[in-house]
Structure formats: structure tokens, C-alpha cells
Length: 305
Image 1 (cartoon, rainbow, N blue to C red):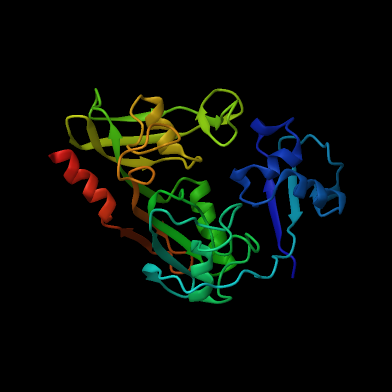
Image 2: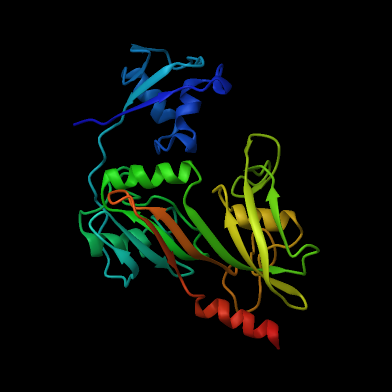
């Protein structure tokens, strides 16, 4: 059966184009703007019970009902890649992703991803909401970031976990090594993040076409030329920690996009160390921690010498 999702437009979004609003990550429909427009053409998007044109500008209080396209069948080939499973039940998994592993297939990474490993382990028991390329994937971390990820086995679990991400109600705690010493041992970075105006593969702190981003940090230990940090995400923007720390003038050690490479380190010294959420079925709050991986501990040893 096709799935229907309903929204009520808040007053602050009145006047915005409906296709743009529905395609925004906050709606968690996992649809591009063109995909939303196609559903509008197919009269699968109703406003107050009536189809609307693609250029419709919404009004506060509009009730939007969208019929989602059927999830595509899985066609990727499973690969027998070892998985570090922290927790698993019938609804979800929590796994630790090693540094260097891509979460899902992308140009230049057609094999060897976390998704390929999940397909081998779970078979067809993964949420189909994100389609062929990202089955079960509720959220992502960068290729060269290690640490904990939630994976949904059912569509119901996927919706529940995604809603917690949208509401900023689930726990995400990272550890990082940042370049230099901080003037304040702890603080909050509240700076909006958007696409870089020149290099479209990068993000930056900007007021233009950006979204609010909030990162809380505290010092674990300050070394002579670097600082070991604990960071908690209030929002989850692309590259948020890396962009925010670079914005402060303290990029993540080894970040070759927002800072400089570090000898012997492939990418940034950043680890998703803790994750917590309400279980979609039981309603119980679960929290998991991942110890610092070898590469991270090696960097800390080098900083002590």
C-alpha cells in the first residue's frame, strides 16, 4: 500500500514554495525538489484535499498530504565485510563504522560500503525508505569519521528514528582532536551552515541559504599544540563539527578539507563516541558508547611525547 505523509504548514513558512519546503531535509521525505514536483504533476500532493501546481506558494495552516512513491527493490550485491555490531534487535542495529569506510554507494565508491556489509548481514531486512542506494540508513557520518551509526530494519523504526533526529531529541556525542589551544575550555558554537559559494563540495558558516547549527564543546585535555575535545551536536548539519571548529580557527586535526593533513593520519581525527535514542517499539531510552579507535589513541600518544 502507498504511504501517505501529512504536514501542517507553520505560519513562519507561509509564502515559501511548497516543492522547496517538502524537499528540505527537515521534512525527512528523502526526496529531491524535482521528485516532489513529479509527485505534484501526478496529483500525489494535495493541499487541503486539492491538487496544486508545481509553483504553489503555501499558506500558514495548509494541510499537505503527499503520497510517497513505493520504495525501490534492493538491487545492490551484498558483500561479506565484517561489521562491528554494538546492538541489534528486530527493529534496528547500532554499528561502529571504521574510518575510511563510505556509508553508502556514491560516485567512485560503488563497492565496499557499509550498505554492502549491511545487505550481507541483514538480507532484505532493512528499511526501504531511502531506496536502493541507502537501505536502512537513517543518518550518516563522513568517510574518514569513525564511530556509531543507527540502522533501521523496518520502515516504522526508520520514521521513528528520523523524527528524533528532526526534533534534536537524540544524543550525539563526538570526540575530536583540534589544532591549537582554546581560549575558553568549553563553549557553544551557534553559527549557521550552508553550501560554500565557490566550492560546492564544501560547507561554510554563512548567513546566505543556511540553516542554524549548534555545537557544544568541552576540553578533555589540552596539549601543547592541540586539544582533545568532547562535542555534543544540537543540530546535525553536513560536516557540522568540522566546519564549526575551522570557523573558530581550530580545525580538526588531519582534516584536509577544512584544515591541513596530518602525517600518518588519513583524514580527520573525529569519532562518533556516543549515541542515544528512544527505541521505536519499546519506548525505552537506549545509549551506546564506542571506545576510541586505534588511530585516535595513536594520535593522543604522539601529542603526549
